[in-house]
Length: 103
Image (tube, rainbow, N blue to C red):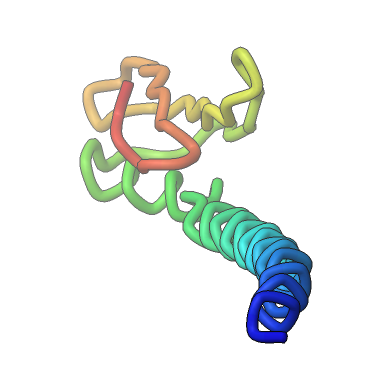
């Protein structure tokens, strides 16, 4: 009788562990999806905008902004700003669209 109960308990324990493991995997996938979506939102919200780039270039070099645009290079946004400096020269400045650093 005891052996029969032990066998039944082991048989029932096996599927329970599989169900628990499946639930853990499902939770891990949901958490991964949430994490990925959160990272995407953060990346989108932390972009350095064209307006911010223009303000930065104006503060760095003075002068008058002639043209400002954003282009993609290998999928990466690059702000290209042409400025007429106080010395009368036209300067082209490239600003990274993610970090805001001058390239």
